Length: 491
Image (cartoon, rainbow, N blue to C red; front, side, top):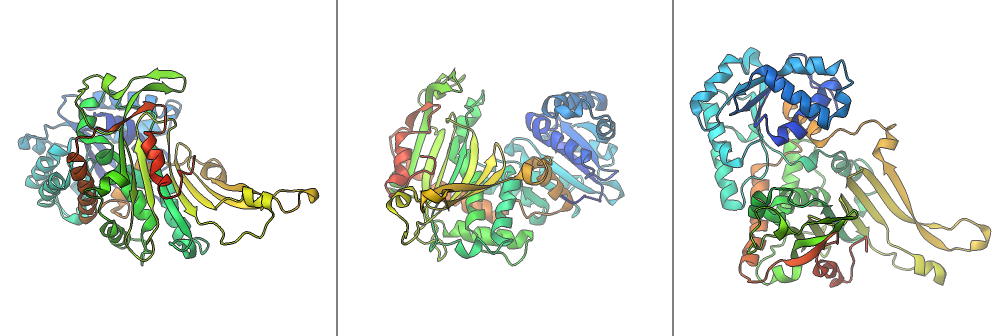
């Protein structure tokens, strides 16, 4: 990442909350540690709680000690980072409180200002309105919106309309932290920075694409929130759909925000609707039950605190998506995500077609596998390509076996620390680079597609299928690709 040379003020609404302490402030600390924050850049926490700047600095230091253990022994960064930190007590629903930003000279000296809204989306509109009423929506000022942006198209549109009444579209950064991961950005480099893959990136060569985001955790005390969202809204509508867009998009003319996002919106508009009876053949939803993960017994969804036995909220979704354009006609995209699954990982699998004719002996034919390009996003970030190779040895004849060509980012770059997604995204906001952020029409198109699935589900009395914690979801999800003569790549 290149240095951000221009100083700015970063104001975090919800500055004392979980997201700020776990992700945002550690990310800003790492940027400072790497020399990527300009000298006069300030970080201002804002929330309803009354506390002094010193209290806030102490709270941040405690969080850094927990989430960035190396900060304890770093004698150079913390003193500098501490000087950047200040605090403003602001009730987001009390417009008069916003005058307190004047006391901190926010945006003075023609600095750029980043307002990060790490709050409930219900407050986005009122915060943006109050900022505008106090002159804090000038062109050099930007606002970052955390997900979820609504729970359907109508509510998402209402939030966006409130925000765009006070900030221009070019000032609004709708964040999806998955797009800040190194391997996600490497997907663009693989496709458009090499001559090897792009000529083979179409329905003539690719059999199917699989995108998996698997979690071992449950709702973790957030049953009330999660039950209003569910896996389709919480994960598919943003994370998985955005990954699908990056895999499927056409080459943009340039690597800039509008060129990339113009191509992504074309993919979203080409997604075949999943509505009515199609929802029963192309989607599977489930709820986790009791089970065992890593040798420990874990609760089922209805054993969680605050649960309601009548809930039909899905904690697992698997679906087949189809893109109706020339490049991807006939290529299924299998998406799945769930909680309390057997392993934590996120990956994209590009499954190539079989060779049209094998010239090798019977033993090799039995071993012959199709090529796979696997892009692993977490827990480790790596890229692997499965190819067929002759078994070494003069007496082995022409027996073949699959071999993985692996690129580990940490090993390839001498174990250099891979930045967290929020580091890249925060720096991009400060640079005013919106390439990795969602545009208004992207959000609407994604919600329109997801709303069709939700509407179909609402028309049935069928409950989500139960699956044991520690498994890979309902049995019906295993059958989803099998119906097409395919399998999930790890089965």
